[in-house]
Amino acid sequence: MSAHAVLAAQTLDDCIIDQNWGRYSSEDHAIWRTLFERQLSTLKGQVAQEYLDGLEALGIGPDGVPDFAKMNARLRKITGWEVVAVPGLIPSRPFFQMLANRQFPAGTFIRSRAQLDYLEEPDIFHDVFGHVPLLTNPAYARYMNEYGRIGLQAIERKAVKFLARLNWYTIEFGLIRKPEGVKIYGAGIVSSYGEAKYVAQDASAHHLSFDLTRVLRTGYYIDDFQASYFVIERFEDLFDVLEGRDIMALFDEVRGEPTLTPFEILAGDKVIRKGSGEYWREFPGTKTKLK
Image 1 (cartoon, rainbow, N blue to C red):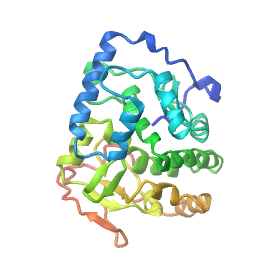
Image 2: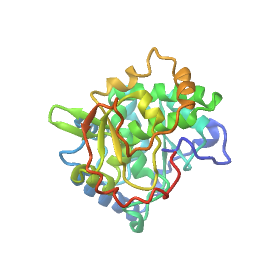
Image 3: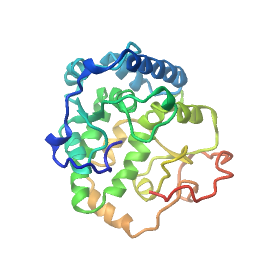
């Protein structure tokens, strides 16, 4: 997500631009179609139904790059949210302000064919296909709104890194347990061909029951698939763990604790699936610093 990078623009107004939908070329729309059809096929049977319901409700389909104006007309009626166009990665403060205002920032550029499988900066496919459909779910939308409100406090308390971990293990790479099994909802998986296949086909990663303190203490690597995923039981749980809790005090508490790696299972963890660790067996431990 675009929460923690820095651009010259610092105010909310500086960060919001016109999508200028008419500028997209036939090749841009064709790339969207390729990404959409490939990803939806990969997610079949693996993604939460609430996500698929959101795609349908917003009219997000394979025809081409979505027009924010048309999409927002539907989204506002459902949960009061809207998508706003931004120039790329934006600073933390306006990012959290947008979420607190029920505005989701989305980049407007779309990747090239050479970048179909991976690109470093999130594009419109990641932001819209990955994130926006679940904003039609009232419980999830409420969580995102609260996440933004808490984010503004976290900036003042120099605790954004803990909120980034919460973002990573829920909004980006979260799983949810359904009667038919564990399903994907995190945008980082939903929009990633490689990670979606990894979650569906590879038993290397641990599936751990979501625990807020555990998540805030667990670091992550940004350059490979996850070694652990945290699983919620229902979308209402996301807001419930924040409501009525002194989150800033919890941030202060975990600040003094050592960072946990995503490879370990602790005695207090509720393990839904113990991963084989096969994918990570050759991991050298020096790819990147834990976040």
